[in-house]
Amino acid sequence: MSNDTYVIRHVSVLGGDPADLVLRDGVIAEVTAPGAASAEGATEIDATGLVALPGLVDLHTHLREPGREDAETVETGSRAAAAGGFTAVFAMANTDPVADTAGTVEQVWRLGHEAGLVDVQPVGAVTLGLGGRQLAELGAMATSAAQVRVFSDDGRCVHDAVIMRRALEYVKAFDGVVAQHAQEPRLTEDAQMNEGPLSGVLGLRGWPAVAEEAIVARDVLLAEHVGSRLHVCHVSTAGSVEIIRAAKARGVDVTAEVTPHHLLLTEQLVTSYDPVYKVNPPLRSEADVAALRAALADGTIDAVATDHAPHPVEDKDCEWSAAAMGMLGLETALGVVAEAMVSTGLLDWAGVADRMSVRPARIGRLDGHGRPIAAGEPANLVLLDPTAPRTVDPAALQSRSHNTPYAGRTLPVSVVATFLRGRPTVLDGAVVGGAAVRA
Image (cartoon, rainbow, N blue to C red; front, side, top):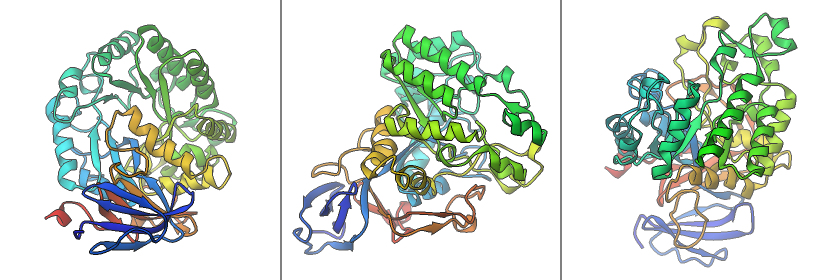
């Protein structure tokens, strides 16, 4: 065995019985009974008490590069992702310049490859410059080296029904999917928080649930009409859940994601007027949170996606109305899902693996990720300690920005190790891999 061989001892696979895993040449070479794997010449890791999941996959990450490297870069975002247990992330297109050409998506893809910590899969813009008026180079991005399969104007809604229909028709040629930021712009002009009694009390312009639900309803009808794949980004309301549930029951090829923060946080936090809680879509009511948790548990919502949205301090440390929308999510996602879904009995660890790895990889058509932990499969793994709570310290995060809503909050689990194709990117909770290690 070479020094690139690792034997992970006594690890609980998906929360089940302990086993030994042998990682060699980028794959899981063996899965044996505890203590049965040969360790000659290998690096051994005592994983007693740890849980092994397939490496997490995030369908919705903002890495900001090119253009806003003051907030995040592909490298710093990759470090954050690895620290959170991710082995692949989909980088959203709202960069500067927008990722609406083959050249720009290839640039992002190559930066991810150079960082070497996670597989960075670019998301292509649906329309030129996110302007909503003319389709971007969808085919060119799909056939580029980046092989884009997910297209989104996230940050903005593709609000023109004709443009949305054309996009849905176009991506069928290469089995792509349009990921919609569901927000009717005329209903959310200058909106600041969830519309309801609390927005009136706080004097902040309300963001009605129907602004999301109207677009979701329209788009599932369009997807049904043209027979294409639709993915709904960051679902946040109980009404959207019911529309998606009904569409799936009719056989519409629609998938959906929910963010960790919409599973845990509610609009009540806005009473602090702390802009760290300002996000798009806004934090909703307790009833919405309960509906989102139930939908993730029963599979109506397919995936957890972070919507990791880093911002420099000057964009968040200001009055509420002027603050940018968005929160960090990569490094805390697993802990938040553990608190909201596992600790409550709504999901077990196998369910977490399905919603945070298997289904996201399938939706994004990402080979080599979200695979079973079995002999011959790619060795993309995360090891977590389900009994080691972690208190979130913004200064200790790997991201270049610090706008986490969980500062000082203790989450119930910790990421101990992450492996990308059999090589550690995180060991003992510290980022160790990437280009520097390969060099």
